[in-house]
Amino acid sequence: MGENATPEERPVSKRGKVPAVVVPLLGVAAVLFGCLIAYLNRDFTGWFAYAPLSNTPFGANGAAFVTQGTQVGLAIAGAGLLLLAFWAGYRLGRRASAVSNPAQPH
Image (cartoon, rainbow, N blue to C red):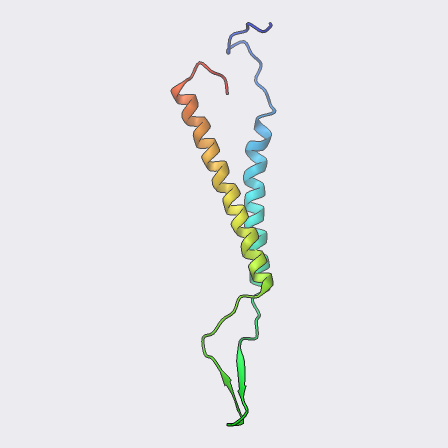
């Protein structure tokens, strides 16, 4: 019809449906990939010191350091969680605006 078509007469756009599926899938993939990287890079040998006067090595029980690979994996997983949180907030905001003003198309 034209510029003056009512919301019921406007064709439904498929363009808005693609990000609704792609964004959460990318977020879940980033979380899983980051967790996998962090899990595979967990083998750190630990911390030790040598005390030359007593001729015995000293090992700190329970001391754990995070390797660079684990840090990268956790950063990727955190970015995926942030993406999922953004997507959830965006979708909830759109739903709330659609409920409060049903005459406007979204």
